[in-house]
Structure formats: C-alpha cells, structure tokens
Image 1: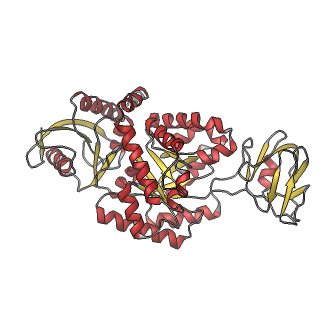
Image 2: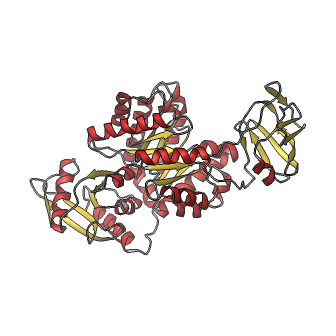
Image 3: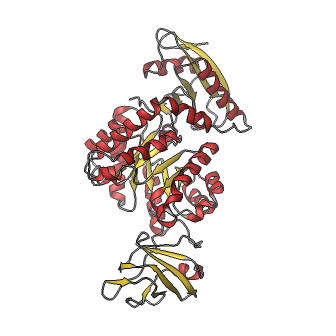
Length: 478
C-alpha cells in the first residue's frame, strides 16, 4: 500500500479504536504508526493491541510502527476535607507536608521534592493552569503562596511548575514496569514524558539497551533550555503542545514548534507534532478551518509526522480524523510553494561521508527528475540521512531488518520494504529496480538512483551512489 504523501500520521488507540477491524480501517485511511498511551492502558490490553497491529501488518506486508507512550510522573495535590474549595484572587494559600485534609487556607502537597525545589517567585499552575499561585515563602515543609488566578480547586488536581527544575527522574516505578512489559512485546518506539534534561533520555536508554528507539516528549519549559542536548541524546522528538501550552504562554508555542521542527531536522532526527490537531473531530465528523490550517502548518514546516490523540482514541469519528489528516497532507504537498518552503529550510550536510552521499543523491535525483530514490539500509540510518534532505522524489527504503522498517514508519517520505539482503552489488541494483517497479514508483525504461553502504549489511556505512535503468521486467542495471 503506497501513500501519496510524505508526512507520516500517528494514530492513538483507545476505546474507540482497539479491535482488529477498526485498526485495519485506520491503517487503510492513512495511519503509519499506532500510539499506545500507558496512562490508560493495562499491560494485558497493551499486549493485545500489539498483537492486533502485527496481525494487520502481516496482512498488508508493510511495516507498521508501534509507539508506547509512558505516563511519566504525575504531580498532584492532596485531598480537601469537603472535596473542594474556592480560591480567591489575592488570598494566601499554603501547600505543606501535613497529610491532614485541606481547607480554603491549605492543602497537602505529597511531593517533598517540589517543596525542596520551590523558591520565592516561582509559579505553580493547578488543574491544567486554571488556577495560578506564586510562591512567597518556601521551606522543605511548606510553601506559602499568593493566589494570582483563583478558581475552584478539588481533590488531587494536577500541579505544574514552569519555573522549577525538579530533581526527579522522568520515569516512575509504574513507567519502569510499563517499559519492560512493552519491550518484551517488541514495540518500536518509546515516548518518554516529563523530560527535563538529556540525562532523563540517557537513563531510559540504559534500561532499553537498544530494544526500541526513544522519542523525547518536549512538554516542560526546562527542556526548552536544554533542547540541543536532548535532541542529541534522543532518537526522535515529539512537540507535546498541550502540556507546553499549560506551562508556557500560549503565544510562545507556535514559534517553539517551528524551532523544534527545524532543530530536529538539522540533527536528522524525526520530529512529531502532537496534541489537539483536530480536536473538534472528537465530536464532529469535520474539523474547523483553523484546525486544518494548524495541521497544514506542520506539513509545510517539514515535520516528519503529525499525531492524533483523543480524536482517534476516544472520539466518535476516528477513521474520518485519520482520512482528514491524510487529505490535508496530500493537498499541502501538491502546493507548488511546498517545495520552496522545504528547500529554504534545508540544513547544510554534516561533514560525513553518509551526509555527503545523501545530499549528492538528492541533487542528482532532482537534476535528472528521477521518479524514486532507493536506499538499501540495514539499520535504517541511510534512509534517515536521505529523508533529512527532504528530496523531491519518493524514498524507497529496502531493509532485511523488520525492526528497522518499523522504526522508519515515522520518518518523512520513506516507503519501507522488508526484503532479503542483497548478495552483491549487482543483485542489489537489480532488486532495487524490481521492488520500485512492483510498488508503482517507476516504469520500465526510467532511471532510479540507489544509495547504500558497502560492504553490504554493515550499519552506518553509507558510501555508495548509483544510477540504474529499469528494464521491462522491473530489474535494474547500470
């Protein structure tokens, strides 16, 4: 099944989309990667979803990526004696280590790490930012705050701290158990929540030991200041706009989205734009015009993927949401200005043989107006390097490694085929043409460009570029 767009689509699974028939429909509508949110998914259900996705994958013969999203730390208030209170602007309100039920003047904050890290002047956002406090006096036992934006506050509402660097791991005991369960099932990507620093990613990678790739979710202000280090440590990036919009002024989120998209592309790491992209489609079969423009902006920016959350997990119209994203992607990529935007943002190649070959392959393919750029890749790195260049022709990645193929499902413009490794260079050239011919990328008599690493089968050795003609049976020759 060939997609007619380069940007990829992630669809979150949930109550509205957990059976075989629905997952099959979502894939046919355009989903390339399925996300399993461990905030709402027990291990048995996660294993069932993975098995169902693999069933769909085998029936279509095309790699499908699976992303497991870890919940991360959840910082919450304690309970109130009467279940809820009304906080007034300007009043004093204390957060403390006393476990007694709270009232209109105080409540327990069962996180000593927050009390230890808070400083006067730091903001505290309660219930997704609906109530805002400013710390005025802080100790390890309590924090006296002033209510800046009041409102109703009830038991165990969430706490966000945009100004406070918390000395906590991005992984809780629940996350560690979820991670191990996910790795046993053979998922492809792990999305790491609550990332504040590169060390959070490095800690997760030590546990994962190469069994999956790590996608850092950027949802904390602290991560913005350390973005370069986090990108370097990660395998991919997710722009988690919902949480960013809680802890940062909303008007900053669009510019940060653009900055992160460009930084990730420069580093050759996939970047996913997420949260509220087609939010109205949870209840409506059609999106708002503003939502269509929002999705289109991510496509124009050259993001690798766009993601649906509740729209596909719990909404009334999951298939329509995916097909709407699919149509938006196709339409934007047909726009004549789309290529000029991508070209203007193209980063200079790194001073490595692999990046030089990828850049040269793009230039040759576009100069000769070739219909496909074919990558033989063992680890997926060759295809990822070529995708960084955002070439005009489609990228066909051929790999003997199904795990590499599944991870490439999130990478811009890559149509991945799993096939036996080439015996030699002649076999590589011939079968590259056959596969591209079979999948409808080239016709007999056309030329293709082939990028690979020699010796074959050794990861990270992208060093060869060939132009070949496709014969009447699809086989290519130099």
